[in-house]
Length: 149
Ligand code: HEC
Image: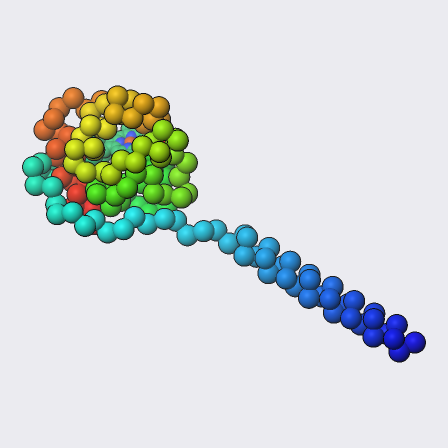
């Protein structure tokens, strides 16, 4: 009699512990990962363009797909601190394999090439922006991006 009671008690305890653990893991799984932040820009500001004009151009050419706020991704990933960053850093944004595996570091040169003609720079990328033919405008946009620390 005593033995059965003990066994029963133990079973219940074990069950209670297990369901407690399941709930805890469940809660942990429900909590969303915080959005990724890129490391602060380490490169000096790009001074071969005009950041003020670049902001205007950015708003016309890039903003419809790219916000500048952490966690706020549109068609394209947000671009805060993109200057000098490694490609494809945001966990919560689904990049194409083509871009993600490109191993690009976003320097002035690689940004220039990409926004001048995304498809030509990275075969298979999903960025469908108008190629920016005007080199001065590209420099201005890059200057603006380099100030977003
Ligand atoms: C029509 C929408 C659209 C426009 C306009 C656009 N982009 Fe993009 N951009 C994207 C998409 C989509 C991706 C992701 C591409 C991929 O995964 O292949 C992307 C990716 C990028 C990346 C890589 C980000 C990272 O985390 O590695 C950079 C840099 C970038 N865009 C810069 C720009 C700039 C600068 C402009 C304006 C000159 C611009 N884009 C205009 C859609 C756009």
